[in-house]
Amino acid sequence: MEQRTPALADSPPTQQASLLRTLGPGLVTGAADDDPSGIATYSQVGAQFGYSLGWTMLFSYPLMVAIQGISAGIGAITGQGIAQNLRRHYPPWVLRLAVLLLFAANFVNIGTDLAAMGAALRLLVDGSQLVYAVVFGLLCAVLEIFVSYRRYAAVLKWLTLSLFAYVAVVLTVNVPWASALWNTVIPKIVFDSDHAMALVAVLGTTISPYLFFWQAGEEVEELRRRHFPRLASHPDLAQSELARIRTDTLVGMGLSNLVALFIIFATASTLHIAGITQIETSTQAAEALRPIAGEFAFAVFALGIIGTGLLAVPVLAGSAAYAVAETFKWSEGLDRRPREAKAFYATIAIATLGSVALSFTALDPIRALYWTAVINGMLAVPLMTIMMLMVVNRRVMGRLTAPWWMVTVGWLTVIVMALATIGFFIL
Image (cartoon, rainbow, N blue to C red; front, side, top):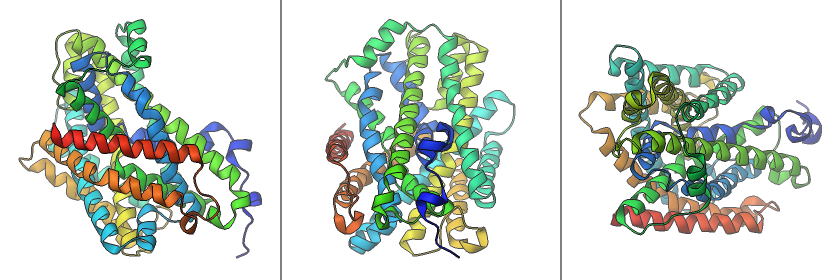
């Protein structure tokens, strides 16, 4: 087959296509960050502290943009995912430990998300929460394995619209916008254990290792789909592609944090005002909204849990599959047919359907999320440190090393997450 020149094979989306076409891996990654577990965290923050921690969403935005942009850049420039780059440039034990921790955290997170989706559907329709969790698990696995990458990427992109359920909730309740926006723009920092724990929880929920693996892997998929070579081999043609990635990441992370902020606003203006300050699960937040905000807000909040879960579970399973397949040099990629990447898709099935078994155990979902946070905390900082070393290394990135501003914000993210992780274990 004749090699296609990148500049001619596909016109740069940022110049000749709509914004919707430009958006892809970054948009899906950002939306998946607001999974049912994240919704529970943001709901608790709003219920316990009102609007006073709204500023955390503004503070974490540039950190997210930098680290996810770095993840995407590693994938697009090297033509390989995070795990493959770890295998090529670092000792084997580094890769094995990182992938083991990632798979363990994702496995538990998928299980808790499916359980939350089952519980949310039970709030709307009588039935068994366990049966609903199994059905959602099967649905996510079947779609991810048997639907072509092009169509499945479009499905995930459209599922991001489910995030606007929380915008609708905010529009149905009475939000004192002056106070809410003031607290978002002007930080109100309180030095006590409760506020510190909330800050740690927000950062841990917002900046998660599985998102690094997913976005890098999806950028590799995009190169294959559009018949682009790795950008390191064509640095003179990389400008438009890196501009697309930058726009995609800015918009995706912006949507993620905006929706998280709206969840805080919704629970602050309803639950906090009503004196309900303890929320442990996303479905508990939905139930608490019913008598205060009405049936519509309750139903939309619950449907949002299901929609975001349908988006997040495939991302969690897919990121684990990318990491495992790259570790063992298996054929991988959602653009491949099941028979072409059997082990890769088997990992997706095991991660998704195996985690459903957690719903049939006596494992407390809150305790499960605690251990997920512990594992992610152990993985995030060293993994980000290695990624930062990668993006300034010409042996890895060629001439396309990261610009100084991205390196600066990236290292700031590492420092902030290190302090947050230390704070988590102390608190």
